[in-house]
Amino acid sequence: ALGAGVGAGVLVSRYFGARDYGKMKTIVSTSLISFLVLSILLGIFGFCFSHSMMSLLQTPADILDEAVLYLRVYFVGFPFLFMYNILSTMFTSIGESRIPLVLLIFSSVLNIFLDILFIVPFHMGVAGAAWATILSQFLSAVLSLVVGLKNFPILHLHREDFTDLKDTAVLHLKTGFPMGFQMSVMCIGQLAMQAVVNSLGTAAVAGYTAASKADQLSVLVNNAMMTAISNYVAQNFGAGRWDRIRQGVRACLIQTEAFNLIMCIGILLLRHPIVRMFLSDPTKEIYHYSDMYLTIVAPFYFVLGLLAVYR
Image (cartoon, rainbow, N blue to C red; front, side, top):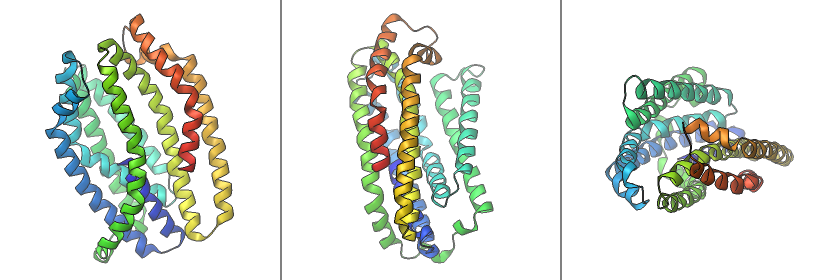
C-alpha cells in the first residue's frame, strides 16, 4: 500500500509540476478506485487466512489465538488504512505536507487513547488494541477526505476525470508496482525473520517485537524522506528543472543521514528503556534478544538512508 501510494504520488507530482491538471486528476481517480478494490480484496484474503498465516509464521501456541484475533480485526479496517495513505500521498504530491502531519499526529494520539480505553477499563485485550487502530484510521481517513474537499479545489473530481482509466491504470501500475514490490521485499524479509524468531519461543518474540518497534521508527523516517524526495523530484521533473533535482537530492541525503545518525546513537544508548516502554517486567533473556537485534541493525541505518533517497 505504501509503495504503490508513493508510485501514485510520483505521477501526481509529475503532472502537477507540468501543470497538466486534467491528467493529474485522472491519476487521482484511478488511484482511489484501484486502492479501494485492492484493499477490499486483501482484507478479505487476510481475514480468511489469518490463522494459516500465523501458523506458517510458527507463532507460539500460547499466543496464536490472540495473534489471529488481532490480525482479523486489523484486516477489517484495511480500506480505511489504504484510503488514509492515498489521500495523504495526494496532499504531499501537491506540496502540502503539514496537513498529513497533523492528521498523523491526531491518529496516533487517538490510537493511544483508545488503546488505553479499550484495554484497561473495557478489558478487551488484544482485540481492543486492534479496534483502537481501526477506529483511529477510520476517523483519520474521513478527516482527510473532508480536509481535501474543503481546502484543495484542484483535487475535486468530476465525471470527466473518470475517463481513460485503463491507460492511466497501466501507467500507474508501471510506476507503482515496482515501488510497492521493492517495499514488500523488505516486509517479506521481516516475515521470514519473524518466523525464525517465533520458533525460538515467547521470550524471543517479546524481545524482538519490542526492539523492532524502535527499529520501525528509523524505517518510517526513511520512508517519509523517500516520499518527500520522490514528490520533489517528480514535480521538478515535470517542470524540467534538472538543477533543482540535483540540489534537492543532495539536501535530502544530508538530512536523511543526519536523522539516521541521531537515531542510531539514541537507540544504542537507550536500548533497555525502549524495551521497558513495551514490556512491564522484561527478563534478562528478553534483554538479550532485544540488545542483539538493535546493536546489529542500528549501525546500518546509513545504508537504509542511501536506499531511501536514491530508490
